Image (cartoon, rainbow, N blue to C red; front, side, top):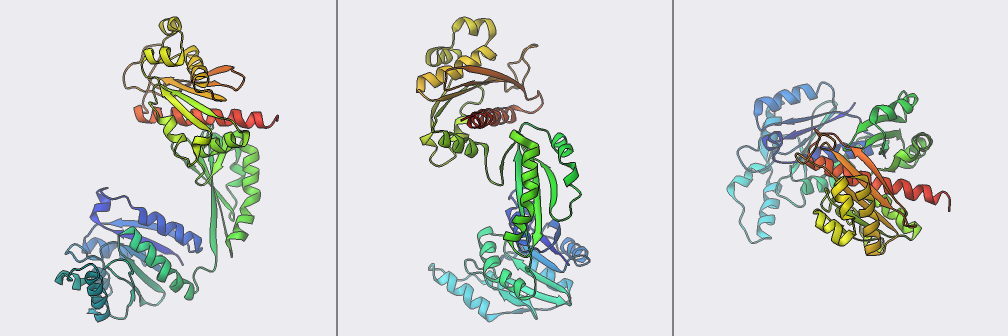
Length: 420
C-alpha cells in the first residue's frame, strides 16, 4: 500500500515552472510514514493522463494530483479522472457560491468560465480551497483506492493539504507511523571514498543509509520509520554518531546547516572576527557569509581586489611578487589574506585568487586553478592551491572556490578549539 504523486501541466514538462509541489508532498508523505515509490509529471492531455492513472492504480492506493483545476480549457484534471472511471460529473452549488463570494470580496463578478470548477465526479467529496477558487476532491472510485486533487498553486495546495487532506488520511488509518531522516553533509571527501568508509551501514533496513552527491559536497541520508518522530530520531542517533566519528572533519553539518552558518557559529563561539579579500569570486564569498542573519557581529567586510592595482593599493600586495609570480600564486594569496586582515583589523583573513575561465589560463596555470590564503590571529599566513578542473565552467569554479574557503576556515577553527 503506497501513494503516488501525479503532477499535471505542460508548463512543468517545458521547465517553465519549478515543481516544488512534488517535493512538498514527498516530504509530507514521509512525515506520515506513507510509502511513496513513484512520481509522475504529465502534460495537459487526456489520453496521456489516462495512461498515467492506469499505471498508477496497479501499485498505489493513494493518488495525489496537483495542477489542472483551473477554469481554462486546458485544465483537464477533474474531467479526465472522472472519464477514466466512467463516472459523470455533477455541478455543486456550494462550490459556485464559494467562488462567487471570493470574487465579491475583491469587488469582482465571477466569470462564467469559473463554473467549470464546480464540476466534480458523482460520489466525490469536495476538498475545500480556503484561499483560491479551485477546490479539490477526495474520491474513492473503487475499493482500496483514494484520489485527492489539489490546485497547482503551491500556497493553496499547502493549506488544503494541512487543513483537510492530512486529517482525512489519519481518519482512514494512514499516518500512524512517521519517517524521520537526517541529511548529513560532507566536504573534502568524494562520494565513492565516503561510501567505502560507511559501506557496512548500507545493508541496514531500518534505519537506512543512502548516499547522495551534491554541488561540491556529499550527503548521506539516514532515515528511520517509527511510531513517532522522537522514536525515529532515537533510532538514527547511533548511526549518525558512528558516521561522524568515521568522517571526522569532513562532516560539517546536517539538513539546512550551511558552511557559512557553521563558520558563523564557530567564529561567534571563539569571539573572533573575519574579513575577506576576493579576486576571481568577485564578492561571492562575502555574499555567502552575509546570508546569515546577524553575521555583522563576526564578519566585518571585504575587498574585491580584481585588478592588480587594487591588490597593491588596498591590500599591500608586493608589486614585485605580482610581476614575478602573477596574481594567481601562493605568495599573492597569502599577502591578500594578511592585507585584508590588517586593513580591517579582524582576527582572521581569507583570500581567493584564481582562474575561473574560460580564458586567462597559461600552460602552467590552467582554468580552475585557485589559491586560497588564510591569515591567522597571530598574523601567520598560509596558502593552499586547488584545481577545480577545466570543464566545470566559470560559475561553478567560483562557487566551489568560495565554499572551499569557508571549509578551510571551518577546519582551522575546529582544530584550534580542540586545544583551547
